[in-house]
Image (cartoon, rainbow, N blue to C red; front, side, top):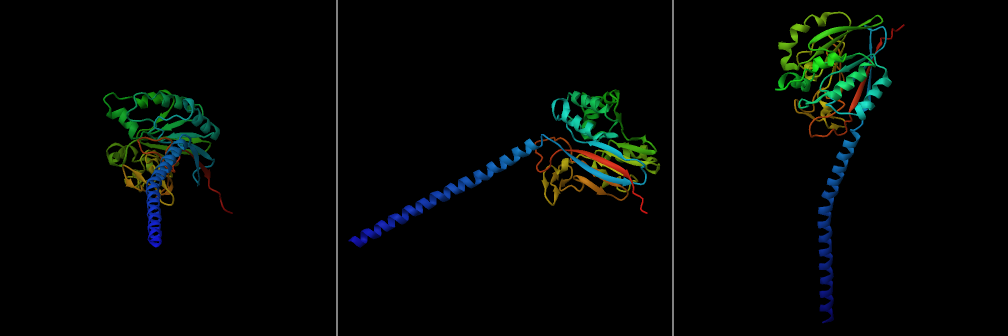
Length: 305
C-alpha cells in the first residue's frame, strides 16, 4: 500500500515537472521571436536615427594633368532632405572643406515635389563658397519633362548662379590646370539619342576631364570605353543595405548587388567614384550605409627621381 502511494506521488511529481518544462518551452517559443523582433526593430530605429547625420568620405587621386591640387565637394541623392535648419549642418561642413568646386550629380529633389525652394536656398548658400556644377538625375528629369505641371529647374538654378550641364561640357581653370567638366543628364538607354552627338568631340579634347553623370550604369554600357580621367555618379544609394564583405544589397534598377554600388572603381580609361548619396527616397531604410558627403582631392603626380 505504502509502495503504491510512493509510486503515485512520484508519478505526480514527474507530471508536474513535465508540465513545468512544457510551459517553459512555450514561453521560450514566444519570447525568443519577440526578443528577435524587438532587436530588429531597435536596430532599424537606431539606423534611422544614425541616418539623420552624414559622414564625410574622402578620396585621394593623382594626375600628371594637374599642376595644383583641386578639391571637389560632391553631393548626390539629397532627395530634398535637410540637415539642420536650412541645411546649416551640410553648408557648414562644405564650407569647412574649402572646395574649389561643388558638384551636384542629380536627385537633389524628388520627382513628386511641388516645392523645391530648399534646394534653391541651399544652392544660394553654397554658391558663395565655390562654383556649383549640376547635372540632372531621374528625379529632376521627371520634374522638368514628365510632369503635367513641370518645373523649370534648370532656369531657376541658373538664375541663382548654378552651372547646369545638360549633355554638354565647359572648361574651368585653376592656375595652369584646365578642368573640362562634362555633364550627362541621361541614362544608358537614352545616351545615343540625347548625348552622343553633343559630346562626340569632347572625349578627345585636352585637359583633365571630369564627367558628372548621375547614372553608374553608363560605365557598364555606353561609356565603358570613354576617355575620361574622373567620373562622378550616384543613383544606387549604396545598395540601401550594405552587407559587410559583399557591398550594397539592392537597387530596383539593377537587382541584387549592383556592380557600382559605392566607392572608387578603376574603369578602362579612368576612375569612377560612386557616391552612396546623402539622402534617401522610398520606404526601405539605409542599413549599415550612412549618408555621405564625398570629398575628392586631385593632386599633381609625384615625379620620381
